[in-house]
Length: 348
Ligand code: P6P
Image 1 (cartoon, rainbow, N blue to C red):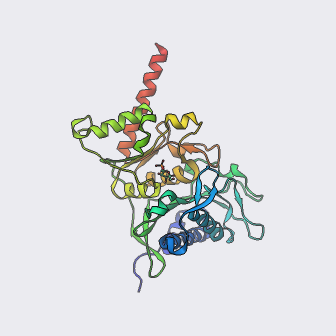
Image 2: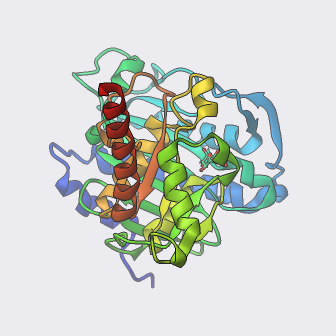
Image 3: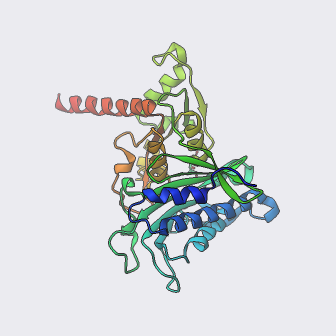
């Protein structure tokens, strides 16, 4: 006899929060959950399924795709294209919007996702994840929506979530009323509510950043990290720990579980390439920022709140500084002080 709340039961109860919910949302979310279960099975079997290694192809990002990147993308499309809840989909792995095939009815939601985030970790058996975001299709969406339909600020997200394929497979979800975590019971194939009402401590002693980029960092980031490294002898009067998994889903989950700050800031190398950052706004920064804010954390670029950004493109990149509120605010303060200093210099 299974006990505990299943994600299906939870979603049905959650949909009561969704304005004009007609059961569409519940059914859509269940299709997303099914896709995550299928991907979990593929990831968990790894070499046994022959799904490791490179697909010998490149995605729009110019990144070499892993076989599981391509497989996971296909799983998401097949699981979500048929039920009539979506007007279109978009993915890290596809340059353009994926229109719903004409043989299927079109719905009122948009689904954007990173089907397998952190996939460089796949071949070394380190945790990876799926990140997804659900938006309403603006207007009636009678015709096939273009990319413009997706270019909504993160505050417009109806739902954001991730699946983490780690020692256990978890799914973490928000529809704007807090954050809840579910663990996949492999014996019955159901996600069970195990982490209700997840919240992030406002303070932390753990930062996550790819320190190999240090020489390219902007001054406010250098200042913040130097102070963390100075530890109890420095201005922060406490020692810090560092983590870097190169899998955003795993980093965010650790922060949701015990606090911390995650940073992939803008740096001089990115500026030289004309990039706005490393991580993508629509299917990494926005869904993760919604989750973090719903758990009492903060998500910022250093110069603006991530969820306020009006997207300019499907694959737009932004700087990401998110996690424990007081730490994020400390970094933002350093950016503000730098801007004020520059303003004074210009005025002098
Ligand atoms: P780096 C994975 O490719 C990803 O998009 C995030 O999941 C992760 O945090 C980051 O990039 C890792 O970047 O430069 O350390 O490989």
